[in-house]
Image (cartoon, rainbow, N blue to C red; front, top):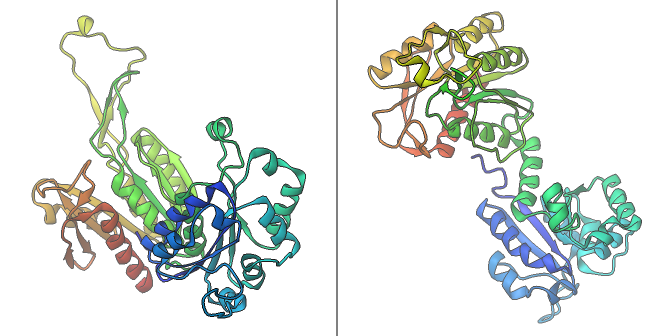
Length: 408
């Protein structure tokens, strides 16, 4: 996945909350993504987590006071505010939120906040009564009006019953807010809309049986996240899968049948800059669907009469003829004559390039977390890639898409 936080300088403010220990997981997650982290902690925050722990994780001295205790060095809140690409305050207590909202600069964290030129993200952490108090809500609204990004505490039915709405959001979700922000500002697909089809389709025989395939949707969902990480608005059309995306989608259409996927894809294609067709769409569907479960003892041998489904790639290829500026990408999963079959599909369906993978390659195809692909473009040029995780494969495919878009 495109690492949008790589090289980013993050000031992490920690306040006096029981949730302060979660700052360690935030630091680890940010550093894993290539960010540089400088911790600023309030005196109350040091009562919950030691600076030495935080310093060991960041490889930087923790800043708490205006003057360093050992040599009296002045810690410039102005320089720190200018250094940062983002400031994240997590956990943020009701007290700190109140000080931020009203400009009470009585500690290093709040003075750094008041000097920050970078976007500020605030993750509240307190008990439900404090969170719900009108003064806290007023202060949060004030921070929003200043342009701060408030990362709301965990919500939803389960969270509200078990831990309350004042609980700080989980570290991975907090980091995700930063990723989404920077992706929307800096990604190489900002301003583009990409449609992706993913997963299998199920073609009903009766209310309990269907014709399907082994597609898990992993490749399509990895591509959806990769595009979103680069700032694209993603329209994801997915068959029956158990996958979730890391980034929020612009639109998500859950479909079951080939016809439903065709309807959603053909309706969306008009509004996109590119479409990537990864779904394993059924080529045939039962001519008739029984209204009740078919009983074996009543039918004995059974013959299914099948009819062709609508060809999504071919239909979009015809639409592309009227909108030549759109990029259309197909997938070919083959078992024999791989390159010949892929090139034939590429030309027949008017694709800009096609991603080929073979079931003969170990670790490629359905259900695996890995894939081994080749990309073939309209000139017949073929580029082979080694076996990689599907997340890494998604990066390779979208790198190629970006290049095609630059030259189209």
